[in-house]
Structures are given as structure tokens and as C-alpha cells.
Image: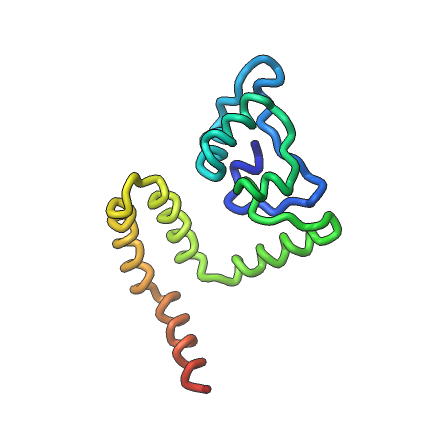
Length: 144
């Protein structure tokens, strides 16, 4: 359930994932079930919820519950690398981008998705952070 609450999931190859509710005769009603259904297929998520069986990391990656699988020895370093890369990005634009991404992906049609994205894109292009990054990018191109 915790992994379903995360934006990115990096798992050790020895990890496994489960929605445990049915194992106790109940059903897992947490938001994790709906997140699992959006990242995997609805049928795969329902199978995980109904059977409460552990899903090995490799299969979780294959069905989209996990972004990547690495060895246990590589896990900490890979998570740190990803976190540092994200932390180096403009925070205001990344926060808005993440909100817009989730709102966009919940829309039923591409047209509705574009409508959600339009104002966010204009705000980003007008931001001080974006303008500074674009100047740096253009300056790199002129040095070649």
C-alpha cells in the first residue's frame, strides 16, 4: 500500500508488494487500490487485491507498479541519485508540473487534458525559474 502512495518507486530485486486486505477476509479499500488500478491494469490490480498474494519486484515493474528494480546493494545509491536529480530542478515548476500531471491524467479525453495543461504551461513559461533556465540552455547552444 505504501508503494502505491509514492510518485516514484525504486525497489530492491528481493522486494515484494501486496494489498493484504483480502487475506484477513476483508478487502483493501484504501486509495492504494485505485492507484494500483491506474498504474497497472484494472484486472491486474483487482487480482492483487482479491488474492492478497505477494507480487515480486520484477513483476511489479513489468505491470507498472514499480519504476525500476535494482539489486539490494544498488538501492540506496539509485534512490539518492534520483532524489538529487529531482532536487536540482526548479521546485516551483516541478510542484506545479506534478499537480498538473495528476490532474491531466485524470481527464477522460486528450482535449480535457490539454485544457488543464494550458494555463500551467503558460505560468511555467512566464516563471523566473524557467526564464533563467532557458537563458542558460540557449547560452550552451551558442558556445558550440
